[in-house]
Length: 299
Picture 1 (cartoon, rainbow, N blue to C red):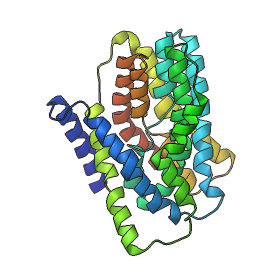
Picture 2 (tube, rainbow, N blue to C red):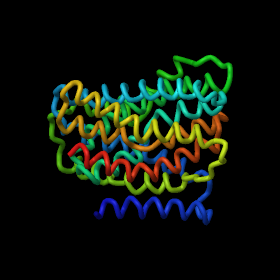
Picture 3 (tube, rainbow, N blue to C red):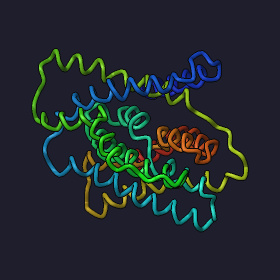
């Protein structure tokens, strides 16, 4: 109960601070940078070594890419069926496909399963969602917003230089090892900042305005993100008889709301900014209810 009290309190604080314009507009960016450069790497170094080398470590990665791929196909064809505009299609290919598996995923999974589940969360997020955002997301943003060619070299360098990804690679070499208590204490203190900072950042960026003519693309994105994605993950786990902690965490991660960073990317690329913000805002709040339903179904 304490974890959920923190989640909703931090979200409300962020939303209220945004409404009162207490922080500058750059505040979410600054908070996100702190999380990406300090909090997430610390959490990766703290949690990944607790995993053991087995096929279970790969399950979150496989499910993450299956969910992203099949969700993208659904959005692509549903956009054609309803004749959504190019900008709306591009926006949906981002916010209707990529889930908020770190900023919202980490606090929710931690609330339901405890900190011991965070290793699988990071595998799903860093080797799934993050790489997809950097590659697939960049391609979608460029393809639907302009005629520029995608710089493949720049994408690869962006992935390699990304601090959480580097920390994940380093942490993989320490699987099965135990750090000195002092190291664990430092990493724990830094990693503990991710939950309050991430949720305040999410609250600062929530937008809820939705024009009526965008109701169809909005509904398509919400369905894809909150309903289709966990169904795909659940189906894969049953198809391959994956019934363990890794599969449960992967299904939970798949059920998270739209990725805020994907919404920012859509907005910066001119892909239906108001629609993108509305999908992220409503999707984030709705995800607290849908993830509870998913949790009850898988435990």
